[in-house]
Image (cartoon, rainbow, N blue to C red; front, top):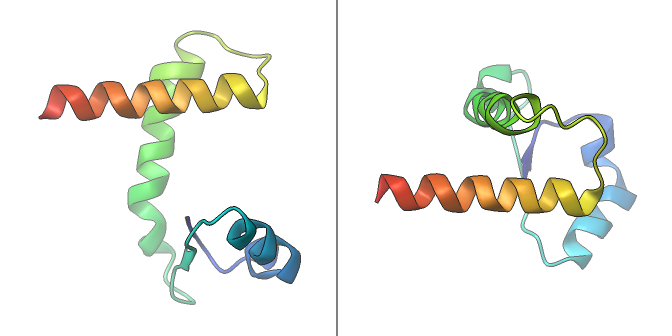
Length: 80
């Protein structure tokens, strides 16, 4: 899980919750917002090609997880 060093992401409660799920964390270097460009681009494309395109305005965690999973699986399969 990659993020910037915002207060939410550096809080002990957040870090413990992430580690408790077995997720490895990484953070951008301080003062380097360009480090986040690849993931920000991915999120923009993901939202444009799924949630906005399908006009998903009312979602649940399950719907978001399924949409992201299907999007990643689909695009990884067509690029191989």
